[in-house]
Image (cartoon, rainbow, N blue to C red; front, side, top):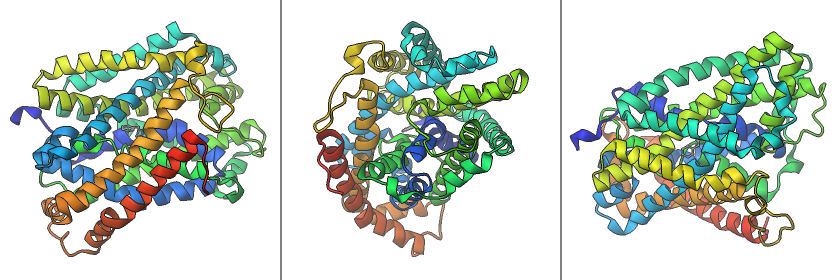
Length: 463
Ligand code: PHE
């Protein structure tokens, strides 16, 4: 296995894993879900899910990866449980599905960066035409997939880690500067107040399920991305400490993204946050108009910086999404990394074409399916994201904790964590993690999975 490569340092792993976590989920999706879900009420729920339900899942994933040094499918086999390989298979399928539509949105972000550089603020009002121009956004998608594949083809230390070490600090500087700037604008405080004051009346069952899906999606959990990255981690790394740092980086950046977004929206609406409607267009349709009001010079600079930030954040995530199937193919079929990378990147781009067409260009893909109990059709891209993010990831998380607690066994998990963390055994955190994987995660995630499927796809509501 010497040829698999690995992270060259502890910081390298944390930067790469945080890079996987921090992405469109934090900067594009989180603010609009907060907007739709009652401001702070959604934030509190999301934080609770991240720290209570996701923490034990992340620890388990990294530990399984490090113990076996294999991809998510091979890992279960290497532990001696061939019959549980299906969890890894499902993870790889989720990863492929997520990357197929994620790359489309990443392409939009990159396209908007080019528009901002040219000072074309009108693009905000033309968002629906922009996404319908499939040859153009398709080309942006190709550029994005090429960049992703290029990085992954360079391997772990020389590609994934190197890119993350450059992109992550840059991203943090950009997002902090933008948030500080946004807060100096007139009426910014109305946005901050909206963000911090919960409106519990907006919490519906759907908002709860979305918050759970968002927690898993945003932390890159439930599909083996962290089994894969964990398989490249050194034995003297402290898994608990890494999990804390990755989680804090992820929720921290999502939080700051809100501190940037809501003041900007409040500034544009002159402090009126009463009918803030989120939706996928929050960033793409609204922000260019905000940047325009800042004047040509500042507007171009801030606008370009913003979409560059979004593209960078997306890139470290697409890299991790591609690395999962690549590791699988390289480990299991012994293909050279470069062949696996370019083959899979092409394949996933092709699977993403229906998502590309489903934003108004093709009526078939735009009105792909009407869920039971709904009167409106759902487009293909939303369908794939409903399926993968909100359904398959929490299910994957549930199965991973069940497997760890009852099949692989808690003692083995503790043994693996204790390598590199000698004080772990007998600590309070060990007890909490055991409680999490044995009872809390399987029960809560299992129930929420069932409720989400019934609600989302069949229109059957219990709460
Ligand atoms: N966490 C990424 C984001 O927030 C998305 C992602 C999900 C990446 C699953 C890898 C695995 O954008």
